[in-house]
Image 1 (cartoon, one colour):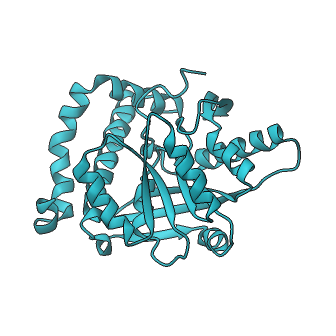
Image 2 (image 1 turned 45 degrees about the horizontal axis):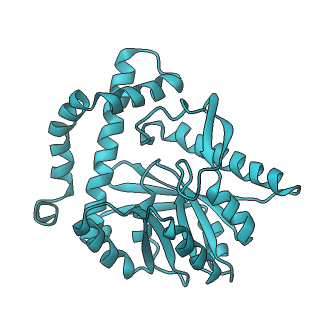
Length: 275
Protein backbone atom coordinates (compact mmCIF):
# COMPACT_ATOMS: atom_id res chain seq x y z
CA UNK A 1 0.00 0.00 0.00
CA UNK A 2 2.84 2.42 0.88
CA UNK A 3 4.59 1.47 -2.37
CA UNK A 4 1.50 2.50 -4.31
CA UNK A 5 1.11 5.80 -2.51
CA UNK A 6 4.72 6.99 -2.70
CA UNK A 7 6.25 5.15 -5.68
CA UNK A 8 3.29 5.03 -8.01
CA UNK A 9 0.97 2.75 -9.92
CA UNK A 10 2.94 2.47 -13.17
CA UNK A 11 6.20 1.22 -11.54
CA UNK A 12 4.18 -1.51 -9.84
CA UNK A 13 2.67 -2.49 -13.21
CA UNK A 14 6.22 -2.93 -14.52
CA UNK A 15 7.16 -5.04 -11.50
CA UNK A 16 4.35 -7.46 -12.40
CA UNK A 17 6.37 -8.63 -15.41
CA UNK A 18 8.89 -10.14 -12.98
CA UNK A 19 6.21 -12.01 -11.06
CA UNK A 20 3.89 -13.38 -13.74
CA UNK A 21 6.37 -15.86 -15.34
CA UNK A 22 6.78 -17.61 -11.98
CA UNK A 23 3.02 -17.72 -11.48
CA UNK A 24 2.51 -19.25 -14.93
CA UNK A 25 5.21 -21.82 -14.17
CA UNK A 26 3.90 -22.95 -10.79
CA UNK A 27 0.13 -22.50 -11.25
CA UNK A 28 -0.25 -25.14 -13.93
CA UNK A 29 -3.95 -25.90 -13.34
CA UNK A 30 -5.03 -22.28 -13.79
CA UNK A 31 -2.77 -21.84 -16.80
CA UNK A 32 -4.13 -24.92 -18.57
CA UNK A 33 -7.73 -23.79 -17.91
CA UNK A 34 -7.20 -20.36 -19.46
CA UNK A 35 -5.26 -21.88 -22.38
CA UNK A 36 -8.26 -24.14 -23.03
CA UNK A 37 -10.51 -21.07 -23.03
CA UNK A 38 -8.35 -19.34 -25.66
CA UNK A 39 -8.39 -22.50 -27.77
CA UNK A 40 -12.19 -22.56 -27.48
CA UNK A 41 -12.57 -19.01 -28.77
CA UNK A 42 -10.49 -19.74 -31.85
CA UNK A 43 -6.77 -19.29 -31.13
CA UNK A 44 -4.78 -22.07 -32.76
CA UNK A 45 -1.06 -21.34 -32.64
CA UNK A 46 0.84 -22.04 -29.41
CA UNK A 47 2.51 -18.64 -29.66
CA UNK A 48 -0.80 -16.76 -29.76
CA UNK A 49 -2.23 -18.86 -26.92
CA UNK A 50 0.83 -18.21 -24.75
CA UNK A 51 0.77 -14.48 -25.55
CA UNK A 52 -2.93 -14.18 -24.68
CA UNK A 53 -2.48 -16.28 -21.52
CA UNK A 54 0.32 -13.98 -20.38
CA UNK A 55 -1.76 -10.86 -21.09
CA UNK A 56 -4.73 -12.40 -19.27
CA UNK A 57 -2.63 -12.86 -16.12
CA UNK A 58 -1.10 -9.40 -16.54
CA UNK A 59 -4.51 -7.72 -16.84
CA UNK A 60 -5.75 -9.63 -13.81
CA UNK A 61 -2.70 -8.55 -11.78
CA UNK A 62 -3.18 -4.94 -12.92
CA UNK A 63 -6.78 -5.12 -11.75
CA UNK A 64 -5.55 -6.18 -8.29
CA UNK A 65 -3.12 -3.25 -8.24
CA UNK A 66 -5.96 -0.90 -9.25
CA UNK A 67 -8.09 -2.35 -6.48
CA UNK A 68 -5.50 -1.40 -3.87
CA UNK A 69 -4.95 1.99 -5.50
CA UNK A 70 -8.63 2.80 -5.18
CA UNK A 71 -8.58 1.70 -1.54
CA UNK A 72 -6.10 4.56 -1.12
CA UNK A 73 -8.53 7.02 -2.80
CA UNK A 74 -6.38 7.32 -5.92
CA UNK A 75 -9.35 7.17 -8.32
CA UNK A 76 -8.38 10.59 -9.71
CA UNK A 77 -5.54 8.81 -11.53
CA UNK A 78 -8.00 6.77 -13.60
CA UNK A 79 -10.35 7.68 -16.42
CA UNK A 80 -13.69 5.96 -16.82
CA UNK A 81 -16.05 5.91 -19.81
CA UNK A 82 -19.59 4.59 -19.34
CA UNK A 83 -21.67 3.07 -22.12
CA UNK A 84 -25.34 2.82 -21.17
CA UNK A 85 -25.23 5.34 -18.34
CA UNK A 86 -28.74 6.48 -19.25
CA UNK A 87 -30.01 2.96 -18.46
CA UNK A 88 -28.48 3.17 -14.98
CA UNK A 89 -29.79 6.70 -14.36
CA UNK A 90 -33.30 5.57 -15.28
CA UNK A 91 -33.11 2.74 -12.75
CA UNK A 92 -31.58 4.93 -10.03
CA UNK A 93 -34.35 7.50 -10.45
CA UNK A 94 -37.05 4.89 -9.83
CA UNK A 95 -38.45 3.71 -6.51
CA UNK A 96 -37.71 0.02 -6.99
CA UNK A 97 -34.47 -1.72 -6.18
CA UNK A 98 -32.40 -3.20 -9.00
CA UNK A 99 -29.96 -6.01 -9.74
CA UNK A 100 -26.70 -5.37 -11.60
CA UNK A 101 -25.54 -8.66 -13.11
CA UNK A 102 -21.82 -8.99 -13.72
CA UNK A 103 -19.33 -11.84 -14.07
CA UNK A 104 -15.73 -12.77 -13.36
CA UNK A 105 -14.86 -10.65 -16.37
CA UNK A 106 -13.05 -7.33 -16.07
CA UNK A 107 -13.30 -5.83 -12.58
CA UNK A 108 -16.86 -5.09 -11.56
CA UNK A 109 -15.99 -4.19 -7.96
CA UNK A 110 -14.08 -1.10 -9.07
CA UNK A 111 -17.26 0.45 -10.49
CA UNK A 112 -18.35 1.25 -6.94
CA UNK A 113 -15.53 3.78 -6.63
CA UNK A 114 -16.84 5.81 -9.58
CA UNK A 115 -20.57 5.98 -8.81
CA UNK A 116 -20.58 9.11 -6.66
CA UNK A 117 -23.74 10.91 -7.66
CA UNK A 118 -26.67 8.68 -6.85
CA UNK A 119 -29.41 8.41 -4.23
CA UNK A 120 -29.66 4.64 -3.95
CA UNK A 121 -27.21 2.56 -1.97
CA UNK A 122 -25.34 -0.28 -3.67
CA UNK A 123 -24.72 -3.67 -2.05
CA UNK A 124 -22.08 -6.03 -3.42
CA UNK A 125 -21.09 -9.59 -2.54
CA UNK A 126 -17.57 -10.38 -1.28
CA UNK A 127 -15.97 -13.55 0.05
CA UNK A 128 -16.11 -13.57 3.85
CA UNK A 129 -12.69 -15.22 4.20
CA UNK A 130 -10.78 -12.40 2.51
CA UNK A 131 -8.14 -10.71 4.66
CA UNK A 132 -9.61 -8.55 7.41
CA UNK A 133 -7.19 -5.76 6.46
CA UNK A 134 -8.56 -5.65 2.90
CA UNK A 135 -12.19 -5.83 3.95
CA UNK A 136 -11.82 -3.03 6.50
CA UNK A 137 -10.13 -0.68 4.01
CA UNK A 138 -12.67 -1.60 1.34
CA UNK A 139 -15.57 -0.99 3.72
CA UNK A 140 -14.28 2.46 4.69
CA UNK A 141 -13.45 3.51 1.13
CA UNK A 142 -16.79 2.42 -0.31
CA UNK A 143 -19.00 3.62 2.54
CA UNK A 144 -18.37 7.21 1.43
CA UNK A 145 -19.95 6.30 -1.90
CA UNK A 146 -22.98 4.52 -0.39
CA UNK A 147 -21.61 1.10 -1.33
CA UNK A 148 -21.97 -1.71 1.21
CA UNK A 149 -20.14 -5.06 0.93
CA UNK A 150 -22.01 -8.21 2.02
CA UNK A 151 -19.81 -11.26 2.80
CA UNK A 152 -20.86 -14.68 1.54
CA UNK A 153 -21.72 -16.86 4.55
CA UNK A 154 -22.08 -20.64 4.80
CA UNK A 155 -25.50 -20.24 6.43
CA UNK A 156 -26.73 -18.31 3.36
CA UNK A 157 -27.59 -15.27 5.53
CA UNK A 158 -26.26 -13.06 2.74
CA UNK A 159 -29.35 -13.98 0.70
CA UNK A 160 -31.62 -12.33 3.29
CA UNK A 161 -29.46 -9.19 3.31
CA UNK A 162 -29.71 -8.95 -0.48
CA UNK A 163 -33.48 -9.43 -0.29
CA UNK A 164 -33.72 -6.69 2.35
CA UNK A 165 -31.68 -4.31 0.18
CA UNK A 166 -34.07 -4.80 -2.75
CA UNK A 167 -37.13 -4.30 -0.54
CA UNK A 168 -35.81 -0.93 0.61
CA UNK A 169 -35.19 0.15 -2.98
CA UNK A 170 -31.41 -0.26 -3.18
CA UNK A 171 -29.26 -1.86 -5.89
CA UNK A 172 -27.37 -5.12 -5.51
CA UNK A 173 -24.48 -6.34 -7.68
CA UNK A 174 -23.94 -10.03 -8.36
CA UNK A 175 -21.55 -12.16 -10.40
CA UNK A 176 -23.92 -14.33 -12.40
CA UNK A 177 -21.40 -16.84 -13.76
CA UNK A 178 -20.97 -18.64 -10.41
CA UNK A 179 -23.43 -19.96 -7.86
CA UNK A 180 -24.15 -17.51 -5.04
CA UNK A 181 -27.92 -17.63 -4.51
CA UNK A 182 -28.72 -21.35 -4.45
CA UNK A 183 -27.67 -24.16 -6.78
CA UNK A 184 -30.26 -24.01 -9.58
CA UNK A 185 -28.64 -23.76 -13.01
CA UNK A 186 -29.65 -23.63 -16.65
CA UNK A 187 -27.68 -24.91 -19.64
CA UNK A 188 -27.00 -22.29 -22.31
CA UNK A 189 -24.88 -22.30 -25.45
CA UNK A 190 -21.96 -20.05 -24.54
CA UNK A 191 -19.05 -19.32 -26.90
CA UNK A 192 -19.99 -22.29 -29.05
CA UNK A 193 -20.52 -24.97 -26.40
CA UNK A 194 -23.03 -25.80 -23.64
CA UNK A 195 -22.30 -24.21 -20.25
CA UNK A 196 -24.19 -24.01 -16.97
CA UNK A 197 -25.23 -20.64 -15.58
CA UNK A 198 -26.78 -20.18 -12.11
CA UNK A 199 -30.29 -18.79 -12.12
CA UNK A 200 -30.41 -17.32 -8.60
CA UNK A 201 -30.00 -13.66 -9.53
CA UNK A 202 -32.50 -13.92 -12.38
CA UNK A 203 -35.08 -15.69 -10.20
CA UNK A 204 -34.62 -12.97 -7.61
CA UNK A 205 -35.27 -10.27 -10.22
CA UNK A 206 -38.49 -12.02 -11.30
CA UNK A 207 -39.80 -12.70 -7.80
CA UNK A 208 -39.00 -9.20 -6.53
CA UNK A 209 -40.17 -7.57 -9.78
CA UNK A 210 -37.09 -5.32 -9.99
CA UNK A 211 -35.13 -4.07 -13.01
CA UNK A 212 -32.17 -6.18 -14.16
CA UNK A 213 -29.07 -4.68 -15.78
CA UNK A 214 -25.95 -6.39 -17.08
CA UNK A 215 -22.84 -4.47 -16.03
CA UNK A 216 -19.16 -5.06 -16.79
CA UNK A 217 -16.14 -2.88 -16.05
CA UNK A 218 -13.39 -3.60 -18.56
CA UNK A 219 -9.80 -2.44 -18.50
CA UNK A 220 -8.39 -0.43 -21.39
CA UNK A 221 -5.01 1.24 -21.93
CA UNK A 222 -3.34 3.83 -19.70
CA UNK A 223 -5.41 3.45 -16.52
CA UNK A 224 -8.66 3.69 -18.44
CA UNK A 225 -11.77 1.64 -17.74
CA UNK A 226 -14.91 1.13 -19.78
CA UNK A 227 -18.13 0.45 -17.86
CA UNK A 228 -20.71 -1.31 -20.05
CA UNK A 229 -24.34 -1.27 -18.88
CA UNK A 230 -27.20 -2.99 -20.75
CA UNK A 231 -30.83 -3.42 -19.72
CA UNK A 232 -32.13 -6.99 -19.66
CA UNK A 233 -35.81 -6.85 -20.61
CA UNK A 234 -38.43 -9.17 -19.18
CA UNK A 235 -40.34 -11.04 -21.91
CA UNK A 236 -43.95 -12.17 -22.08
CA UNK A 237 -44.67 -15.77 -21.11
CA UNK A 238 -44.60 -18.13 -18.17
CA UNK A 239 -42.18 -17.65 -15.31
CA UNK A 240 -39.99 -20.41 -16.74
CA UNK A 241 -39.93 -18.69 -20.15
CA UNK A 242 -39.14 -15.33 -18.55
CA UNK A 243 -36.30 -16.88 -16.58
CA UNK A 244 -34.84 -18.55 -19.66
CA UNK A 245 -35.08 -15.26 -21.58
CA UNK A 246 -33.24 -13.43 -18.79
CA UNK A 247 -30.37 -15.93 -18.82
CA UNK A 248 -30.10 -15.96 -22.61
CA UNK A 249 -30.01 -12.16 -22.79
CA UNK A 250 -27.34 -12.01 -20.10
CA UNK A 251 -25.20 -14.65 -21.82
CA UNK A 252 -25.56 -12.88 -25.18
CA UNK A 253 -24.30 -9.60 -23.65
CA UNK A 254 -21.47 -11.46 -21.90
CA UNK A 255 -20.40 -12.96 -25.23
CA UNK A 256 -20.37 -9.52 -26.86
CA UNK A 257 -18.15 -8.18 -24.08
CA UNK A 258 -15.73 -11.10 -24.33
CA UNK A 259 -15.46 -10.75 -28.10
CA UNK A 260 -14.25 -7.19 -27.51
CA UNK A 261 -12.13 -8.02 -24.43
CA UNK A 262 -11.24 -11.73 -24.80
CA UNK A 263 -8.23 -11.57 -22.48
CA UNK A 264 -10.23 -10.40 -19.46
CA UNK A 265 -11.97 -13.69 -18.68
CA UNK A 266 -10.97 -14.59 -15.10
CA UNK A 267 -12.56 -18.00 -14.50
CA UNK A 268 -9.51 -20.18 -13.99
CA UNK A 269 -11.19 -23.57 -14.34
CA UNK A 270 -12.99 -25.45 -17.11
CA UNK A 271 -16.21 -23.48 -17.18
CA UNK A 272 -17.80 -25.83 -19.75
CA UNK A 273 -16.85 -29.15 -18.16
CA UNK A 274 -19.81 -29.36 -15.76
CA UNK A 275 -22.29 -29.16 -18.62
